[in-house]
Image (cartoon, rainbow, N blue to C red; front, side, top):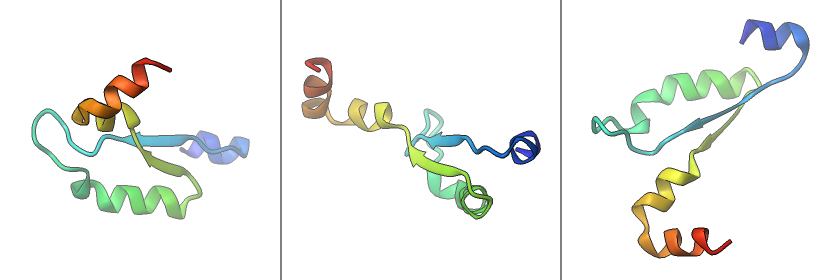
Length: 63
């Protein structure tokens, strides 16, 4: 992150809502807050949401 600050750009960080080991994204609230305060974009990883919703999965594959 320091490199990006020096270069004047910001990455986007994607988090999954649930992880295979059962850890929920809520446990990373402090990290997410720090990233947002620093100007980085934070979002959910869409593939995880599609994997949990079979109706959305079919729509995604047809695109």
